[in-house]
Length: 356
Image (tube, rainbow, N blue to C red; front, side):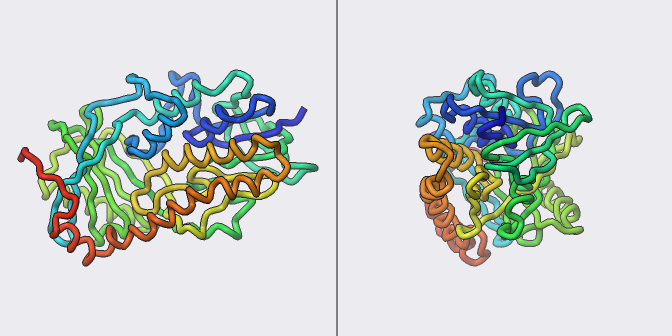
């Protein structure tokens, strides 16, 4: 029997969709990682691991509470904004859950009901048109497997193979490469650092304290100068007073910076959710809340069956794409050097702090 729905990618978008789909569907959920038997898995998602208020709110609406085993020290209630372009600094009140991203993904997969077939440690390879859907091919332990599906869902992130094979001509997303390095440090930093420096990137960089380590990351334009820019970021932070020693690990991933008109929801036999479809904030690159929201929207559109689901999904997703449009309008205030300098100088919405 063919699958009704195959979901490629078991991150927050894919796992949430698998959990929410009507139990009458025959569903396959596959991922390159092993998110069930975590003992054997070493690959992790390149992510700061901060759960923003919008994502917290969406989890609450779905009746979920994050288990303490997912959280790490310290919990963060403050953003330190450092503007190297204008030589200014401000603190802003924000409330994040600081978490282990791998454990977070494993927790979401653990909520997937038993009637969903899990295919972990499986790498999606390709798809081809078939009668009333697609035939998908994926690899497990060196062997190729194929399955017929009525609907394939790309939940496989910024560099989505599903999007690349089905919607390459529509793919107008502005792409960045996120580089993150973890360092030993002798201090626990009680804030999330947002760093702006146009010499490094036209997006932004970040610092996060996590379980006694310091993460330094940046969203960079893919080019041969990306590594030089990241090295400059580390040097600037050292000179600014950040203390960090031996590098523990290095991670990288692509991220998107969408415009509202770039969003791709899919076709009659395919759908894109999460960052695969461009559902991510173009101002902050926060993606988990958009992953949860787009998964919920697709699940709702499939409640009335597969026929005509795409039209219903596009309608359900309209509120999310409108939010992305609003984030676009916000971006000039964050990324235009002159406007950002004026806002930071004014102290608008800034928080007074009582520590050195």
